Length: 187
Length: 187
Image (cartoon, rainbow over all chains, first blue to last red; front, side):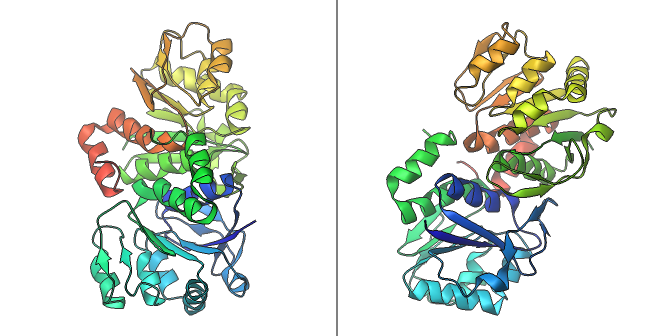
């Protein structure tokens, strides 16, 4: 069973986080959610969510994917977490998936995994991302941008296609399509 | 500020619940989440969510809307809660909005508010709903069905259109469209 880490913290965008956790668990991926201190965190819409683990205890493992939900200040907390940046770089260099949505691609930029990649993010975050990584290949205004082992997306309204793209990358089109039908999404 | 009650319990579908809470709070509706005992509840994808209040303490108030997320056993727990059924009927008879998604329309049926209404639900739940309320006007396979002060929807993949329809009913098209753009949803 493939292992996926979903770090989050105060201000996380609830729909982005839960769409990823819910859909990936429906696909029978082994998802672990983690906050920096292992305590519950309150999202941008003030809903308190309990994590599975403390982030520091999770960073030494070999993850098949690390997926960052957005929301502020969550995306900046994740960006500034040196241990997480190291884990993202390690996963990326081992060919594992790194993914981020909304404001969180800036954390991938800080970790140094966006050089030469096509990406997207929440509208208005492009400048912050380019400040961290001037050499992205292209910034696209598409709901989801998959470029090799980097997947990025735009906001709560694109969180389901983002999660389905992650499932497609890890398990293939059939697994993604099965979840899409199960949740009654799209045509 | 309009007041919206979102009851939930063990097995709640996380995306359905959080899409409603997140989008309605973005629209500046006053949303209160409540579990039967006031304690955190674990969703169908095993994410623990902390409520704002205990349901029994919330049922005497005048709500502008009561919105039921799905997931099992949550939908059946809500269906079997006599106090909630009374609050749903009271709200409905006062012309307030009652809404449910996924497996939860069966709780509206039990509360007696679906007679003569066009509705939808999660695929496969139609029979359970008709067993509670034989006289629905029509069962439609559409993402969201709004019929007067009753709104129903199908599953996690239709939760955002469901939440936007609730905002449209309570605050109008402009407020709904503002949130739609803010979350980067649709065209």
